[in-house]
Image 1: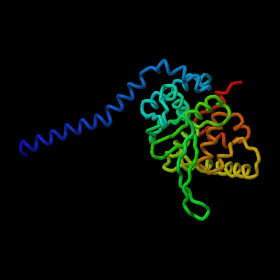
Image 2 (image 1 turned 180 degrees about the horizontal axis):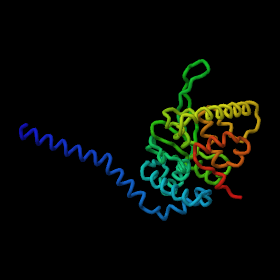
Image 3 (image 1 turned 30 degrees about the vertical axis):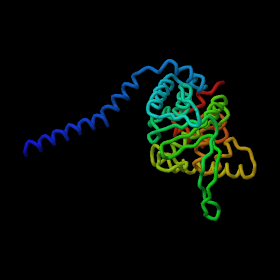
Image 4 (image 1 turned 90 degrees about the vertical axis):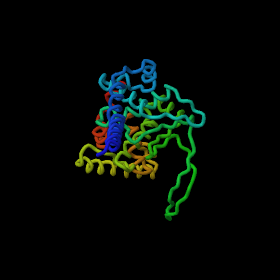
Length: 278
């Protein structure tokens, strides 16, 4: 091997080392440094007022949530749309509700999520959908939130604020859209997220199918159900809607839909009843 070849191999080897450091070593160092840093003092009052149940969480859960919020804000891009300015109030509020779904779970990331787009109010999107004859139609839809499989979540800030003010009403746009993100980790958004073992899918499928059909029946016959009727749209929306109910109205869900509550408790690895006021 001549000198020129040796020099080329040396350069390539050095380049490979640099790439490896950038891809593997530096991210771990950065994460370790981030985790060791204290929770920013200006964020704490935002967290306390934007997530009413925070003060009732166990201390270890509070610490975990603060770490998750730091990681979320560090790794996800917040983008203001239609003139919406992004500030710490928006970042911490959205991150707190999104990361609430991760407390207690082994997965501490939304691995596919890159950006959170924030509109000042509801927004209009074009959606294609097939009709009963199989023909594809395009129409405009007014939305307050949407979760995409391409690494984006879209939220209307006024609806996020409404969710904060009415945390116990069972409707929370952030919990809803980020439940879709968890659902999509399986590769498809269908109401069957990744569970912890294969044996759990049989009970999950049975319970969720029964409750979904029950909600569809109640919705069609205008009968009251604790679960919002939007969950009757499809299994994916059902999972997102019952996630809202699980965190915001856990006692009622446990009383009226005990099997469903237990499935969600096993999946999320928390019992939100512990965080409710007496």
